[in-house]
Length: 359
Image (cartoon, rainbow, N blue to C red; front, side, top):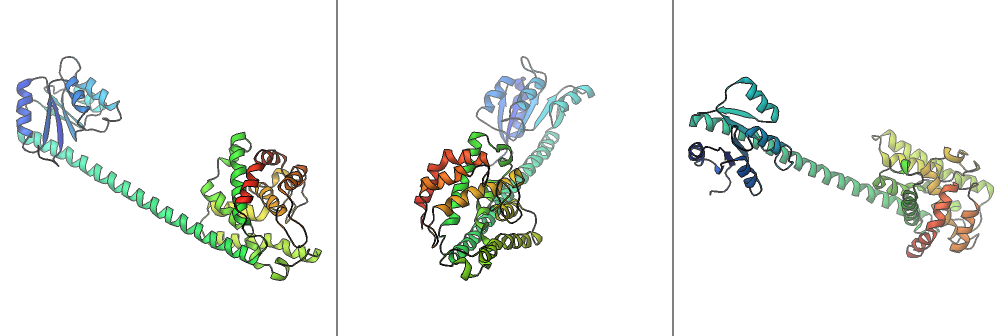
């Protein structure tokens, strides 16, 4: 048959009515005749029609039972059904509409009336299909645009991170490594079921990239302190500590001029609290225990491990084993004890990350 035409399944147990209906319709549509409801479902296995014309009074499975079966099957539930019936009582029509029929046509029917009602229903079908296609295309465009924005966000982040590391030339690769440490810790936390309810609320597409901003405030620290070839004096260390509040201020300015976003919320907490300590002796606020956001407690473990294994003018690089011992001995003072337990299970992964990203 000619392609591109709408498909109609015509179901009628009366051979004469079936032939008459098929002859009326085949000039305009692809028509698939069936003498029973069983024949209808045989056809539906191979043909998904645009419309079903369904007789009600048939032996075996009647029209009401057939439409109920169709509507219970997701493959066929959206196919519109027009009932063909000799009944003309209101209760029968209501029953059919309740079951999902879109129209009733009484027998005997005239060809013009039948064709007009079919055309009306197919117009609705095609409009729904066009609307769905439009919605799907719009969804795809939104998805593509979201991906573009996400890629742009990551490109900007990467550039900012590179600027920070360019200024702080003693910590090359620190931002990349700490992000990978965080990812390792979170995966194990989820496996262990530790803090999992809170972590499940986070979108890792935003949380992990946001960690690249945790040291963004270092951009404003003078080179005389940031890259001093020796240990900082107490006064210099106080200035160095301001990189936290400088970073927080910068992120808050962005938040003041942008819609609320999980990415910025994570970045603010990571930046502002990764130097706080479990016992309350950290900075800049002196938060204690679980008053320190989980983001900051996680970042503290990642940040300190990476600092310990890095060489500085005023200290040698600690070995992986020494760094792990220091972190494990600092559970309950510097670090959240629950996070230290998880760290101990994945410390070999930390070592591998450090070795593979030592640039």
